Image (tube, rainbow, N blue to C red; front, side, top):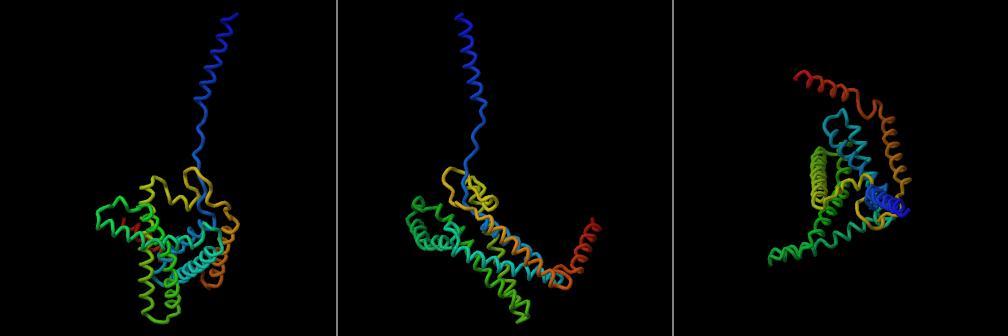
Length: 260
């Protein structure tokens, strides 16, 4: 009788060990760091600038170009208001606080260059400062960009068109710098920092920096932008994209196919 009992206990023990080894691993923890309104603003802001830059040449898509430029101004107004009265993690005061430490950080960098003690430099702070400078520059540049665009559209002076083009190219350069900084930090920290603006979360344990996602506000902002685009389309006799623009696009594509 003792042998069967021993066999039963051994088999049950081995079964338990096998079950433990086959247990699924717990999913990696993450925390929310960006809320929905900030992410939707970022996506619409980038889309409007890309569309405005691509439609900046020629008269056939001028109305679309102007509409996208006005959309950027409206989005900036939303971001300023949201940065003043919104939740703490979305406050613009956080950016200004970071920029306030820039002179001190540059001072430590200068001192390290003189002493050769580069280890004393807080490089992570420098990385965050570079990202903050690029973000603030993009927000600030929207003002002269849209104002010069409005003046150009109303033909207040030919020289304003050159100013508008200069500011637009400067804005593009800052956008590319911003993307380069994000890519560099993603490689350096071994995490995709750009995805934070997609799903709002970052890998790693810890409490959520964003307690409430405010999805309703993000939907409201998206509806407002789409409603404005629809209104502008209805106000234009031939729509925001003229038939000539579509014809030019198709003729250009056919010419490209013929060259092949």
